[in-house]
Image 1 (spheres, rainbow, N blue to C red):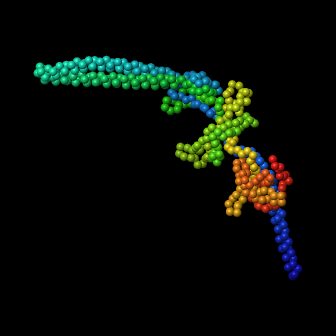
Image 2 (image 1 turned 90 degrees about the horizontal axis):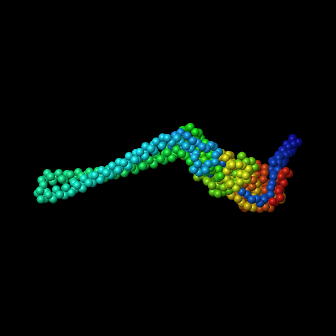
Length: 427
């Protein structure tokens, strides 16, 4: 009986010891194997990355302002044109006929004005005679020389002559208005005739040719007609990229940018931000589309000096880029020279004494223990983050593994350094 009791006491004690040992050694096996890196000084540049398409900064749609058939198209896609060059000729026959009719109507209105002026001169003479006769009749009537009937007849003749004169004056005004209307019609017809000839509004390259000779185009002077071609100034190119709403607040006008174009491998071009959209791209007439990602348009102008060398290897081109090429843009939003920095993965969160999350790192002590150190961070790039306070270059921080840094490691834990990752010397 005593032997059995003693056996059970020893067994329970052994189980407790083995469990504690297993928990100590087994539970700390992954915790001990950590990677570290020394705090260093880096030049950090914060970037906002986005992708987009290359396009000309200035591109003009050549549209038909009048309807008709294209009878001449002296350019083809890729041609270089100068300002004022003929681009499209629309059949002018109907518009020439309309101009002839308008000019004939204007001449008729001018003839009507001359006739109205002649009638006015005749009415004026008749009024003069009637006025003199009426004055004599009034005097004779006072002297009882003429009868009352003659008096009334003279007055009626005077009033009729005056009305005829006023009518002649109004006829002149009407003829003048008719001339103004006819001249406006002539001008409209002349303008429409002129719109049958489309000239280049700027120097550039024909980057798209949509219509061909013999096709008809629709257009009028009040709304945009059909696009016949596009003329682009390829000497100044830009990249139109979409930037997420979380990054757009960091982008500013004239920020420098690095541009990589898929067509030119291992080449990096320089650009600058020239336009930042104020309204999200998913905004529509009836509000915002809630099921779409909220992005903003940002335009980055490519600096010609950054691709000047490419132009020396290309002949008869004003730009090595073509509209629609794919490009990746890194917008350089902020920078910090000589910043105390650590790898991004070393910064994590832990609960403070006040019960709130705080940012910090685990610093390796000489005793092979780690100490939780609260830090204040600044900008970051793809690898390093700026430490504004809490660290200096004499310290070494834990950078991995991720599970250890983010969850399991605690202040005061003893650790062993992974043999594959030794502390780095201060750089």
